[in-house]
Image (cartoon, rainbow, N blue to C red):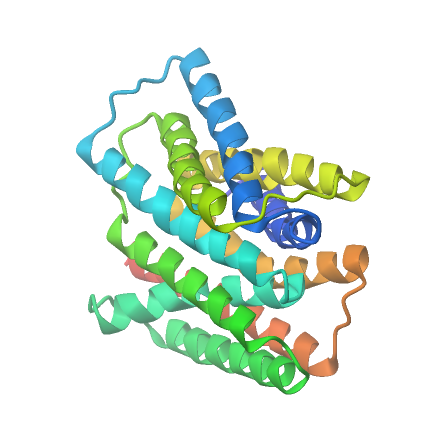
Length: 291
C-alpha cells in the first residue's frame, strides 16, 4: 500500500463519514426520502454519463447485474433511506457510529454463518467493537436518544451487511463506474416511488440545504464512491476495507465541529474502542487472506 493509496483511503474515510453531517442538515429542511431520491438521480446520471464517456459498457455480467440491483436496493434505498429518516430525530454522530459497525456485522456473519476463519486478533477486535457499540448505545439511550430512530439506523446497517455478504465478489468484471451509476439509479427509482407516495413535499429553501445537498450529491455520493473503487482496484478489497475504521472517528468529529453535537466521555471511549476493533478485524482478514 503506497502513499497515494493511503492518502486516497484517508480521503475516502473523511468523505464517507461527512455524509452523516450533511444528511442531518438536509432532513431539517426537506423530506428525507424524496430528497435522497433526487440526490441519487443526479449522482447516478453523472456516473453513467462519465462511464459512457470513458468507454464503459451497459452490457454487464450476470453477477454485476445482481450486484447492481441488490446494492441499489439494500445500500441506497434501505441503508441510506432508513438513515435519512432516522436523522430527523437522531444525531449525526450516533448514526455514524452505528453505521461504522457494518464491518463487524459482516465479520460476525462470515465467522458464524459462512465458517470463515478468524484468528485471535480478529476475535479480540470483534469483542472490542461490540463492547464499544454497546457502551455508546447505552449512554445515548439513557441520555434520551430516540429509540425509533436508533432502530431505523440498526435496520439500515443490517441491510447493508446482508447485501455485502450476498454480492461479495459479484461486481468483478470491469465497468465499475457504470455499475456504480446504475446502482444509484436503482436507489433513485425505489426511493422516489416511496417518497412521492408517503411524504409531504415541502422544502424550506435555505442556503444550508442547498450547500448540504450539493455537497452530499457530489462528494459522498459520487467522489467517495469513485475513490473507493479506485482504491479497491489499486490495493484490493481486503486492504481497502481497513480504511472503514476511520468512519466512527471522523463521523463524530465532523458532527461535533460543524453541528456542535456534544460528546461525552463514554462516547469518546466507545469510539476509540470501536475504531481499534474494526482495525483489528480488518488486519485479521489481511493476515488470513495472506495465509
